[in-house]
Image 1 (cartoon, rainbow, N blue to C red):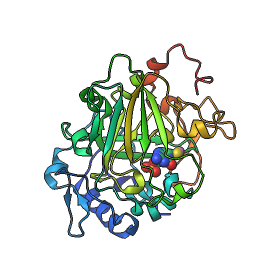
Image 2 (image 1 turned 90 degrees about the horizontal axis):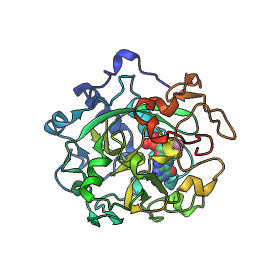
Image 3 (image 1 turned 135 degrees about the horizontal axis):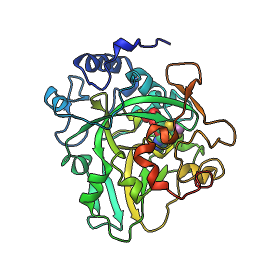
Image 4 (image 1 turned 120 degrees about the vertical axis):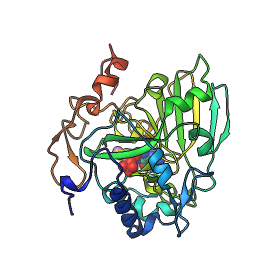
Length: 320
Ligand SMILES: Nc1nc2c(c(=O)[nH]1)N[C@H]1C(S)=C(S)[C@@H](COP(=O)(O)O)O[C@H]1N2
Ligand SMILES: [Mo]
């Protein structure tokens, strides 16, 4: 595999060059060719009918001070090696088959303990925000990792507009359930639909992102189009893809991997190099594009300064 030299990607910038590169790579990755558009005017389309961001929109993306300046993984790495069990368990299954998911139209149902329940388009949820580029570290529980330039808006802003009721303590999320279009859902690799959840304070944390883009383009289907969660201090499976339901609840909601194996996957799933997975160490990780598990994993994936206080007094090996 070709590994980009450090000069090739300009950190913390979506340069015209990286946009060009991602477009070229995009053309080569035929599997994402059928991705639809977000409803409304957020995204323009290219001559193939695929969504792209206009120069004005690109220029309008705010660079976040919360971004890391570490070297970013390439578009090909981020869109070619995925976990999205709805399309199969292989790392290349999502890139192969996720185009079979129709994301246009798309609607997100908001329900439960919330002042403004209803069916929302992605634009309805996101458009009042200025889109931000957030370059985050990403750490899968399987011990591979990446650095990814997401585009999105803080979940906090979206939730505040939806007005959680005072008794709401958790937010539950659900992925699309459509076995006709998601071939992995015709198997029992997990219970469907995929479900996830956060404590409300975690959901309202400024780092928690609703992502709609990647490298200045609309999200490819395999990365969770048209809208997904990103919780950078937690193992990747908390970052649920292709969201169709958001529910505010009083009680801790069930979550897919915890339902599948509670001993191995807790509700919290905070990245923690000191708490091993029952079957492997979490002390180190393999950066995507490399062969070696040779990078030290950081407490809360490097976001401890920002998030550790939320877990004060909790036994992190018990609440894993
Ligand atoms: N709906 C859904 N969301 C999901 C998953 C999945 O299988 N289905 N896999 C999770 C896991 S294990 C990881 S590591 C990340 C991978 O995100 P990426 O493919 O964009 O890197 O998505 C998470 N979100
Ligand atoms: Mo993962």
